[in-house]
Length: 76
Image 1: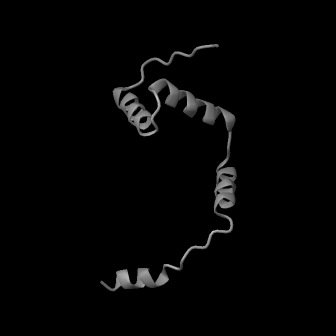
Image 2: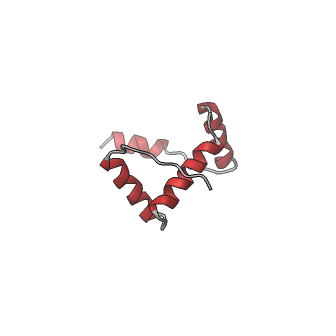
Image 3: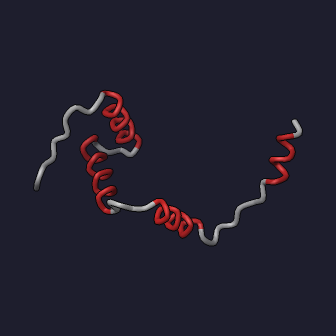
């Protein structure tokens, strides 16, 4: 299987990736591999395509009307 070497990543990026991998119970390599595969699967996804995907995800969900809560908050 081909390999990829990425040089000169800053320490903060490495630490963020390590933290993310730990949260997902994966190795650093496993987490980075998953991120890269996910990005490569949708290389040029437009903002419109992303919005449509999210709309599909929330289709059929009912959300409460927060108008009254906003009014109450403003009156404080």
